[in-house]
Length: 308
Ligand SMILES: Nc1ncnc2c1ncn2[C@@H]1O[C@H](COP(=O)(O)OP(=O)(O)OP(=O)(O)O)[C@@H](O)[C@H]1O
Ligand SMILES: [Mg+2]
Image 1 (cartoon, rainbow, N blue to C red):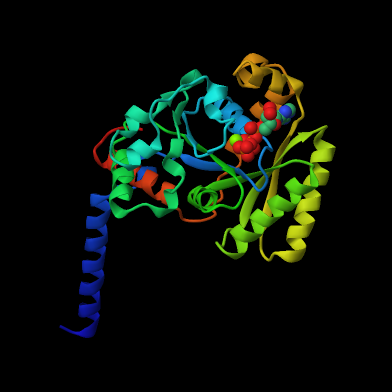
Image 2 (cartoon, rainbow, N blue to C red; image 1 turned 45 degrees about the vertical axis):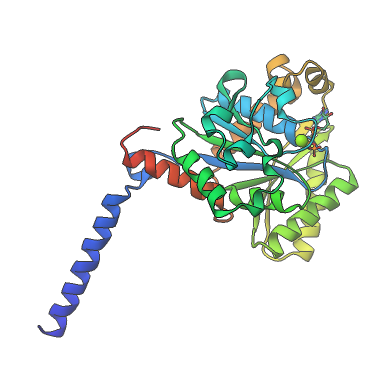
C-alpha cells in the first residue's frame, strides 16, 4: 500500500470511529434538546438578599414558561424553606449517603418549582468519597424531570462549598449592595475566583438600592477596582433591585414578593431580570461538576429516547 492509500485508510478508520462514538452518545443539541442553564447566585458578604433573589427569580422564570429546580446550598437560617413554605423531611445528605433517592428528597414549591434541600448534606460537599459521588451521579441520571433552569443559592463567603458551586455553574451572579463591606467582599470573592480558579466572567446584580443610578454607581465602584487590580475579568451589570418594604412584608407572610404583591416595584424588577437573563446567552465560565453530571443525565435520557 502506498503512503497516500495508507493515509486514506487512517482517515477512514478515524471517521468510522468518530461516527461510532457519535452513535453511542447522541448530542442533545442535535435533537433539538437543550441543557439546563445552571445559575449560581452568590455573594461575598452575607445578608445581601441571595435567598430572596433565588426564590423570586425562580417564580419569575416559571412564569416565563421555564421548568425550574432550586438547589438550596445555603446553610444559613433564613433559607428558601421559609419563602416557599416547605418543610422538607429529607435533604441532599440523605442522597449523598445513599439513604434516599433524589426524587424522594425533592420538595414541591409554589408554581411547580422543585427544590433540592441542602440540609447538613452540603457541609462537606467538597470532600465526598468516590461512592458518594457515584450516588449523586446515578441519582441525577435517573431523575425523570424536565429542567430548564437550575438555580443555586450558594450561601455567602469564600468557603470551599461556595467556590465549588460557583465553579460548577454556567453563570455566576454576584449580589452586592451599596454597603462598602458588601462591595469589598464582592471584590475579594471575584479576586479569589479569578486568580485561584480561573473564572473570568461574572454577572453583577445590585440589591437594596434606591434606583438604577445608585445601582450603577455601586457597579462602577466595583468594576473600577477589578479593572485596576485583576487581569482579564469581565463584570456584566445585569440589573438592580430596589429596597422594597413589600418584599419584607411578603417574607413576614412566608411568601415571595412576586407571589404576594405582583405589581410591587421589586416584583417588576424580578420579572424583568428573569427576562433579561433568558435573553442573554449563558457564557460558560468553567467546566464544573454539576454541569458535568447534568449533561450526563441528559445524554442518558436522550440515548434512552425520552424527551426532556
Ligand atoms: N430588595 C430588598 N428590599 C428590602 N429588603 C430586602 C431586599 N432584599 C433582601 N432584603 C432583606 O434582607 C435580609 C437578607 O435577605 P436574604 O436572607 O435573602 O439574604 P442572603 O444573602 O440570602 O443572606 P445569607 O447570606 O445569610 O444567606 C432579609 O431580611 C430580607 O428581607
Ligand atoms: Mg440566604
